[in-house]
Length: 435
Image (cartoon, rainbow, N blue to C red; front, top):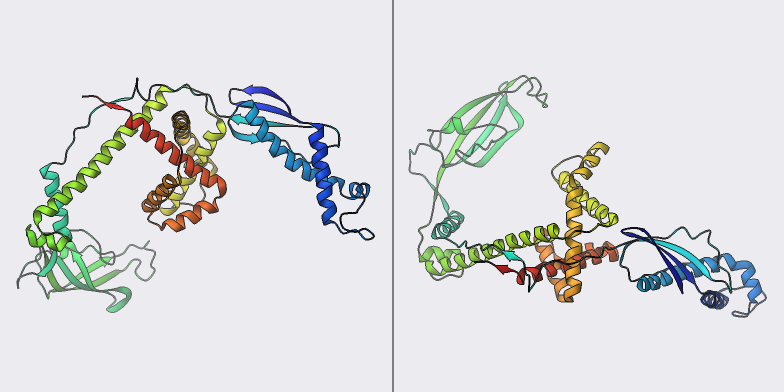
């Protein structure tokens, strides 16, 4: 195979690839032998149709099939021979290309390639240097954690008879709205639990200022005027009178911090046991937070200390992914489904630097992974699936289905992300924390 490589720019190469004449002839011959087995032409037994007749009837189809098989095969060989790692390939339309027996076949592929990266310090003898983070779990933090557990175990109990309602109390109420003396449809609540002082509305009505100082069994009327512009024509420009009845008053009772409390919280025998368990969990969370902070520092330095041109195709792909994620979050929040052209342009400008940063970081970490011989095992892949499923709060099997539905590109994307994470962890484990 002959090949010419032409440099079209820092990240682009044109590969002019020539398939030898004997390879072309062999491929055409094999294609016609296979065709001869399959076609059914009157007057000829299967496999006995003259080649000249097959060429006359099926030459165009056979030649197109041979071209479609030759191009990927010899493109892969050319890439290996040239020693390049393509990130994007463009092959001109082949519908007008001709292929002939006993003649070489030539085609051109334009590829965008990964840059050559000269790795900077990331391990001994010049590892990353990180500042120490000496945070620990304090007794105050542990006490706050215990208070959260107490809140979760709290009970609502009836207040003493004659208790005047105050902020922090819980009331069970009935509410009924009336318009012109008649009950208003859709303006009724029964048995509604409400925390006084929360400023939460009931049927759009603010009730905290009305119930303060009241007692269980009290009933009161609240007049609520509505503006002429109100969307409900029944009440627009009118006043609805709400009757609020206080059915019961309750107060939150926190359990005592003792061994019985610990037993109510789970499989614990003493308060000290639950304290130890809580402290251990908080220390693990703090350890992960410190590790994440250090890794953020590492990623920032890797981006700042490496300088090379970025393949525009990769930046565009990452930018599209960022915008797609932004739009999905916007739609979840009730935003418009498709942003206007000017908004899309603004989004692209806003996030382009971030897309370039992500691509640069990924390329550096992939280079580190290659140099250190890091690979993604099936266990690594499965662990990443489980982690993602947990983050997304969905069954792992359902996530696997979604990834497979995205085809090989989706699988490779996840594999690359897992490899990059392994490389980042490698740099972190080889870093030195000063002090």
